Image (cartoon, rainbow, N blue to C red):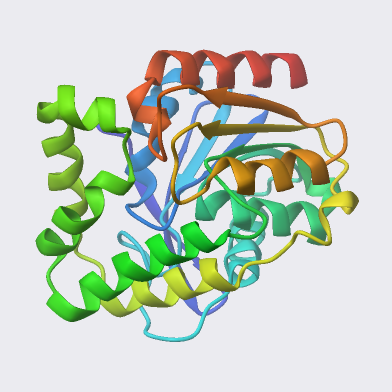
Amino acid sequence: MQEQLNTAKIGNYDINYLDVGEGTPVVLIHGLAGDYSAWTSQIQLLKDHYRVIAFDNRGAGKSAQVDEAISTQDLAKDTLGLMDYLNIESAHIVGRSMGGAVAQHMALMSPKRVKSLVLCASFAILDPLGRRVLLNMREALEWRMNWADHARHSVQNFVSADFFNHKQEQVQKIEALIGGETRLPACYSRQNEACQNHDTSSQLRFITQPTLIMAGQNDPICSLTATKILSDGIADSKTIIFDNASHFFLMEQADKFNQSLKDWLNTQA
């Protein structure tokens, strides 16, 4: 049975969200590509034990689409606003890629509202390789103005060479998912710029919540260089590296990721 989606008015923006399950709240924040459905398997994994909130960021999915400058801090304010709307005092915050950058701002802005952080394939600041990869993906979309072409030029950045070469059927599904985007290309470009501009590296020492960091060994977007900045900067954080995996290690090694997430949340409850 399909879960019921709802719309919340957060500031000037309509935010599309899913709210399922009961218990301690877990808020899932998707990345630059895609929408709330990026968390489909994790929603099913967690909803019997937690209250799970997944949503489309402003400028993605079925949420408001406006061509305007935006920052990861703006998206953090949206997320906190959604928590207000849903009467959620505090929650475990799980963010992937850009979503992890958003989660860091939430922890810095409203520390009492964040029970713990899970940062997946994320960054406090992009390294030169990550910047170049994001710039190339943005330019491919702006030059072609076609999501399918963008997906064809981008998909190899998300999975390891081993996965790309030996799991072609799954690669094609990922490419079709990215290529099936309906959002305004301008919104992607604006959020791509927000990722380029994100820098919490000097503030990480102020993040005191329990934090789990997960990264793909072969990720060119959020590399091990970016991961080390997070791990070194957030005191007492725990880091898990997924060997022979890339930016989409959540899909490449789904069983290991889901078990790691579940184990973490169980220890924080």
